[in-house]
Picture 1 (cartoon, rainbow over the protein chains, first blue to last red):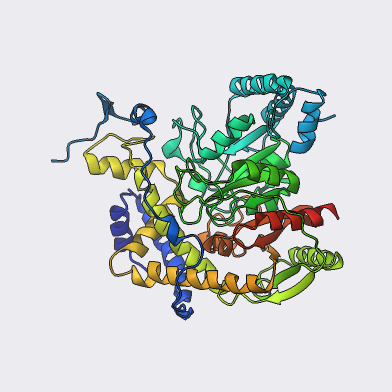
Picture 2: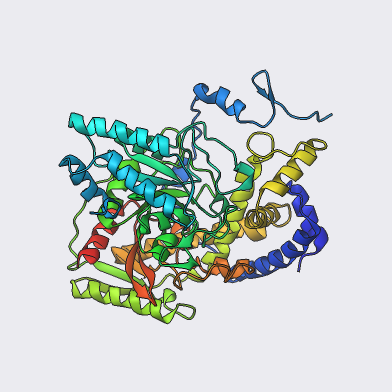
Length: 91
Length: 467
């Protein structure tokens, strides 16, 4: 069973505000789910073979320019100024 | 003639023979959608739908038009349609308007398909029942007290209730096949990479695929042919051209995994699936018992990898760039409160599990281990496909559940995905084919194929459908 404090800590790392009720519910749910994951301890070690298929070869970065929609993307932001997305001061 | 009952092919013939127009078709569907109480659609744009239909009619009049031209369809609300709301059924994106078209939508538009509206889904496609939508569950057209299956719940219900001629869904762990099975329509989850994910709101990027939900197998093939192929905007899409194939069931080897027919599988569902296996055998197929020895680990593996990827993918919903923004307090407060208020319980649960599993000290035990197990699961299928052409399996252990039946037990909900998730972990294509009814509720047969053998799956499904 993970503790309420752990739930609150993870929530903060994940940038999620949880109510007191939610912390209690998540403590219960997460504990049950994490317990279920223990099943994997029984799983064998995989043979030393490379992953087959298309997964590896497909990770190449490709930079595609979509300049035409930058203005609309900024427009969709909740707070903006002079064509930039506005963020609160951090210092 | 009820125009909304027509398949794509039938509607196409009718348009070609001038029996009706695309505007007639579109109006018939819109009238039905407005009368429907299934909650299958989150938004419709009537005026725009009619405009699209008028454009299609002009093309049809000119004589040169493709199979999907003038055909009304519905798009899952996790897929971007420019100028339309795209909410992913989340409060955090309640008023978000898409600024570009997903590649699949662009392709449908190029063909002249008519987009009626956006369909309901579990929030950020996270769920197997459709109940995790922030805007209420989709009801099953066969029994309104039951779920439509998820996450592409609205797409499944819309096609089943003739609210659209076809629909697009997306599938991360069964989200096309589950609602297809629950609603009694055909749903195809393509091979990972066969269809571009550009413009699909990301859930778990190594698993997500967009695919068709249709009234029959032929229609699934038509839509898949239209949306598949390499896209420079999605690096994991593959240069692949769909080619029609006609297989003969005579001599075809069908694998039946022994691990799938065990305790937990509803007796009625088991009977229906076994009947279909028998039917294939009578048509000349050779039934081969196969083993997927690591099947028992698939669910735990999946529910580690998915939340890990989701917790990273959903970091972008921070109250700064899109949608809901709670402006009180400092920058950290904006993040905490926007996400705290805008995201629903299942989304939060997955973000928390993912964050936990990826955090220092736990990474090896969870994420790394799950990736190793994922390899084992892939290898199981590689070995299986050395012996057989396709695999037959259930889609879901039970028919559509009652709305609210498992609402308080997330793990019980996850267990419903037991037959669908391995396919995503292995990147394989699979189709749900209506196979019969258990107490009046549709049950789907899952046909799993090897990578990029959608044509074989579709051909096998077609043989069984026509028999």
